[in-house]
Image (tube, rainbow, N blue to C red; front, side, top):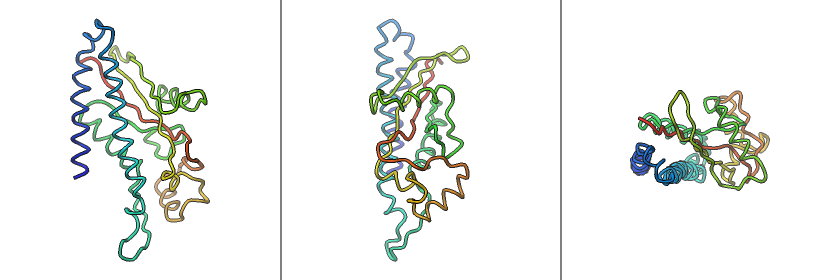
Length: 205
């Protein structure tokens, strides 16, 4: 049920983004109002993914604790994994690239490109307004695109997998060490910038 609801919500956002991006030329003639709408829709798409990640993070005990025995079995069904799968499906379905990334990687597949690295460094600045995304229109290979990224912050529930190694449950630590041998995503505290979620929207057919 939840997966169908998430996919339906994403589908509505895809339709809205498509309408705005396909009318980009017209938007240039009316003061870029449609580009502002595109920014809001990109932000909403990312918020949907963040909300899904938060639900997974807050329900780790429900996911991993056997209701009969009370024993803990870490299954690896964590926010980053769910987020990556949703982002990959979304990108394949729409052609709009949705991606989780960070300067301190756990999954090497999420390595930031140069633009993402530059914006992630902005998010780390103390003067950067917390929770504010950054977007701009760029041209790549002769085609205009809209790029937008929003920061992700470490919440209390995230610390189960992102605190220091010595404070991480042995079951979780062993799983992560086995699955991600080059893991750099330990040592965070609540409120830290964990990374960002970016989206690329083509503005021309």
